[in-house]
Length: 251
Image (cartoon, rainbow, N blue to C red; front, side, top):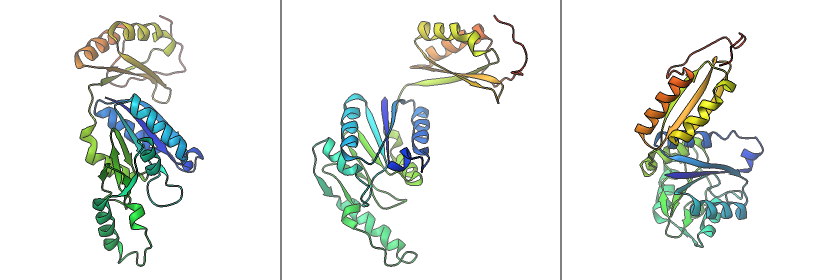
């Protein structure tokens, strides 16, 4: 399964808010064997959101859109997603009832709260509502596009309820080596070509090793590739460490 993640918000691009949602989603999706092929952040701009949603929906198995849902002026995501699929906006009675129930529960701690209930409960026509147990505005699913909140706690709770809809066969393993990165380039290229696996090499001077991630489409290929690589570059599946200041002989 190939997925694109689209995070939305002017505050993300301005650096006012750290984009933890993208990292968290990528980690959870990867754990489920899903291949994340795109992560893009765009501003609260209707036309840009619409065009990217339409593009990614056609190019990937699923798209996760986060942020910009609700009833404030900068919350344009739901409207843009509806336009991407040429759908009207409608009030979800299920979502509306949930918003009312949430407001009633908040009435003692937040009295006289002024909320446009219909605006909060509006989603694209024929979309599947995703109720927001941590907040007000619902998420929704339109074909292969999942619209989730931007508030991290709300996003995590909502995603966990639909996580089983994201599955894939990608598997990965991490190896560690003290050999300098320049000395293992040839082996990394060879293992990628010979076993048709994806290789990532990440030097970590603080930890005193290079971390190598091998990703394959099945466990047998992964085992073969990692075994070959371990023999070629003296890699270990547990962290190893060396003094990066010492002289290292070239292979």
